[in-house]
Length: 124
Image 1: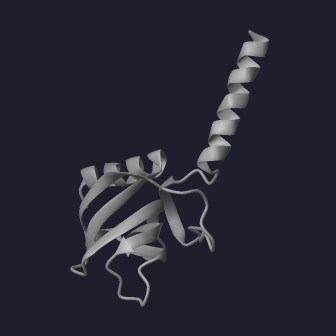
Image 2: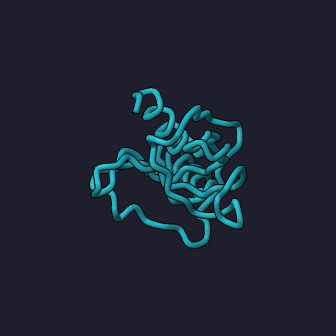
Image 3: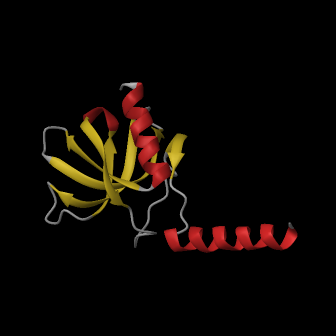
C-alpha cells in the first residue's frame, strides 16, 4: 500500500468526506469511511458505510469492511458523510488504529464550536 493511499484514507475520515474507489475488480464503491487500521490477522482494513456503487450483496448500502490491498483509484469526493449510521460497528478487531471518525454528528460539532466561541467571548 502506498503512503499516498494511507494519507487519502485518513484525510477522508478526518474531514468526513465520501470516497469512491474500485475494489478488488468488483466495480466502483461509494463509501463514507469510518475507521482505518490493522486487523489481528495483520491486514490493513477500512470500515465504512457503503452508500452506492457495486455490491456482491443484494443491496449496495450498509456497513462494509474493505481490505485496503484491494482498493484502487481512491478519490475523495465533494460529498460529506452523514452522522452516525444505524448498526455502527466498532473496530474492536483492530490491533492498530490509524484514524477513526469523530462520532459526533456535524450538527453536534457545530453546536460545540458555537459554545466554545461563546465561552471565549464571555471569558475574553
